[in-house]
Image (cartoon, rainbow, N blue to C red):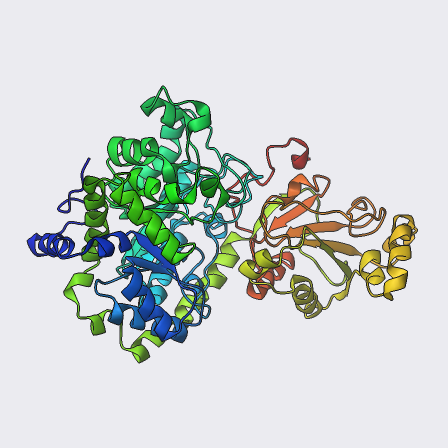
Length: 585
């Protein structure tokens, strides 16, 4: 079960193995402990960056977002001042924009999979790799290889490729091929697999409740396929897998079971043992409640390494956490053998990437050459290609397309809201899809209005009148003729970002257009521009479309399809009908 640097994923020669061994032999205990940490950079200030590598001897970094030039300079400072080359990770889940803000977005996993073509997963990996590598990254926390069995899952509803293990594997292999062309090591996540539970590991425990046999045929099939193809690293999730914990430790009581990040049974026995994974395991972020609620932090840090994880993701307080890890080594929670194995894997990954062969000044491209790789026109064009092929007409039980301004000239756009999540909207990229759709449809000759709800109007009143207005909102009824006489088509647009609560939030008013009661009165279309599972809340809708994001170019492609200049070709990679019968009617 020990690491073998001559085998996949490393394939090191004698010189590479010698560098790993000599480097470990030359380390102090403090430097060895430091290599176990992935720091989340709090600043790009040169003094801060130097102090982190000098004081804590970190093995890896994942940083806060910034533009390409900022991240390039940060990574240059880090590599030039670190005694041992660093693994520098980015979250390239949707494209190069996960490495730098001005990088190229291709699309989240579910959108890419909706093209039904692994070529675009390859393109996602390739473009991510070109841009991330240009600014000094060499490691990516992607692809996401979770399987979306539960449509209520708040973590991966737009981030997973599919609910089909075979499609997840095909897309993930293509992504891995693409990103490795730029000499970036992908880290598939989140082992042993999210998508069964409907809880958020940031906030609570999460369980993969599959039997061993079911897990082997699904999640295990995906991970084994990637391992066999040379996957170099895996991110362990804070996810329980009781069936396999019991298989390897039948006497462990259910109450004592631990998430994978702290479980020897899941990381050492299952992943590294039974499945033969020879690469590096990094924990998911250590601030998440599914990890922190399992034990005291002073025990949690060394337990994660003892369980078989090789890298620990993020300090809380650096001095405190470094001390906890050091204490865990001194008191034997982390054995000498386990520490040696973890260090060999970490340095082996660095050698696999060739970091040991380069001078510090050569670990990044010359700056001008690097910046020239960000936002190449041919790469930006892929976003449009993906949008064109991915937009999915999930349901259409009426003869409504193509839209024609001579037949349905007067269009009312209605915003369908969910719980406010400023963080979620920031991650999703913000934007104003209703304003963009109004502009795009107006350019086609439609007369477009945007509905303003009674509550929106009330909130503009003087403060002393708001409460009275809200009390009366339930009585805001209008004749049906106000809709039928003024509008030929109503398009409801749900811009609800996936999260712990990703359902539509209906207002207190009844009989208003923001609740689609009128489908037999006025022709109606429902478009979800984020979460692909809103049909569960509007099963009465006869036409339902998923666009998977709210970017203006995606909406432009949507209008092209609605007016008949292009076809709806997207294939839903998840169950957009949410397992219900009535959503099909």
